Length: 135
DNA sequence: GCCAACGTTGGC
DNA sequence: GCCAACGTTGGC
Image 1 (cartoon, chains in turn yellow, purple, brown):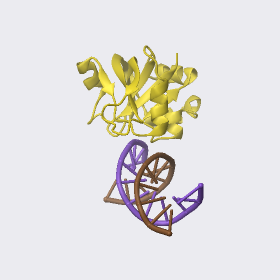
Image 2 (cartoon, helix red, strand yellow; image 1 turned 60 degrees about the horizontal axis):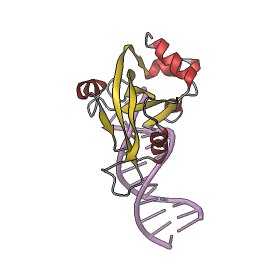
Image 3 (cartoon, rainbow, N blue to C red; image 1 turned 135 degrees about the vertical axis):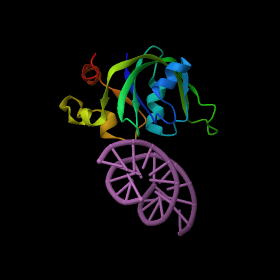
């Protein structure tokens, strides 16, 4: 089971919105690298939910409930969407500054390439972030 | 097919 | 508000 991280501006769509909605279609990704990751997602896989802009922290865990399908909002047909549902909020948000300061997370894809909106998280990185989040 | 110009994202 | 990083576009 792979693990992932998605970014969202909380003003646009927050983790609270996801909890309210129960699930959401994660579409609008128009970046090839991110799209490749979306295509690799399988139902049941877990996803860290990161707020960019306001907050700049991992605020919750979500899961993939539907694997990649064509993004209806994409006229070119190149990009895909998935469906995500909330699992639980973290006990304590983990900020970007904390993640950058943690040696175990030096290789984290979202830190290495900060503009990537969907990125993979390795098992040890996942464990480190959740530990920082209070489990 | 190359590369400069431009647009977007996101941290600071 | 600025700037760095990076993707995309379009002229040649």
